[in-house]
Image (cartoon, rainbow, N blue to C red; front, side):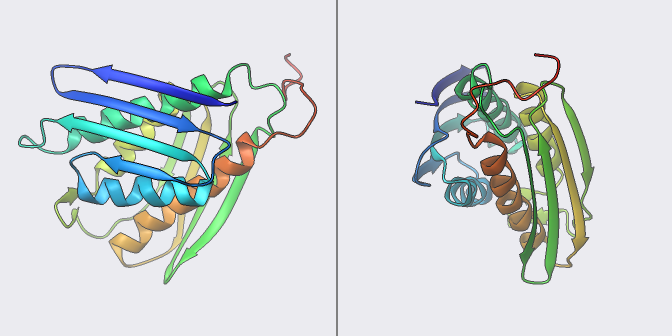
Length: 191
């Protein structure tokens, strides 16, 4: 079974995270950041990943440490659950509409970290959530589960729709990339 349990404790955050790549989309998320809870819940649902995240962070400072450290933990969880990556499809992509927003994500679980980020989020905040933290979350994620991740906004004016479209699109791209193709081979000519 492709599962992982991550525990990350620093002076700024205390995180426990459980992931099942072959789940049903069940989630239990309590990060202390309401908007991030919403994004991770729909990420689990659209990727059909079972995900449990608990975080106690220094949110009285701001959400930065919690969001970045959850990105780190989620990346570590994906890397651990994928193991040697034998039999995975490796690539996935999705162009996802979210009302007026249209978001493209493309993933290559290559073992090399690269984030190409092109979102124009019109507001600095969604509720109390700093929108600049979206990129920080993704950077932490791809650094800890080395992959190429391309994120491009093709349309959109509503900040909430843009970011929600991103998380749904990313979930669908990752679902395709981690899917097993029945080969039991590492999908690379490098071996």
